[in-house]
Image (cartoon, rainbow over all chains, first blue to last red; front, side):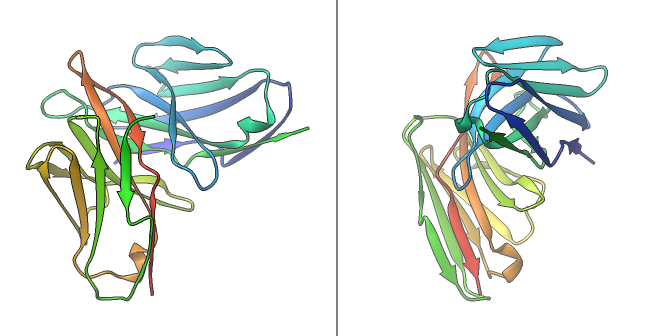
Length: 114
Length: 115
């Protein structure tokens, strides 16, 4: 089976840095994605890792270690609008190697306090 | 924003009735997906499509069927709705770039309640 774990909830202070972890055990791996989802809204794409290492996009960075089945999303200079759920998703290998099957973690609800 | 719409946005139906949800895209993306989202479970894949008339099952496909007769439309049908299918349903699309499918863009969601 496929298993992805994330902390259920996290709290941080405005202006601080927070790291959201994701561990996965899947049959096949073809990339890891992070999405942000505000309450009552659709998920939106944040970052993508397929090779080991750090990917940086402005205030957001994502890290991947394939050998450890581990990723994290780093949010810097937290703002109130960053209060949302953060979803980790693994893209699985497929028959035609185009990787169209995805498995999502349960999501981490982040609350940013003033 | 990617051009994805879902209809209806809200629906209340009775147990045993058929229900069809529609996803429409204007991006000409190859891949389309249907997910359901429930508290404590996150997003779970129901079915996906990798081209017109090409579909495959996801993690929670029992009780659901799909059809894709045109690139832009992907329909999800609950043949006989049950209370366990009360959920928020999201459609997503994905672009094929360089031989690998990239990130998904999600529609606004459909809140379905089965009474």
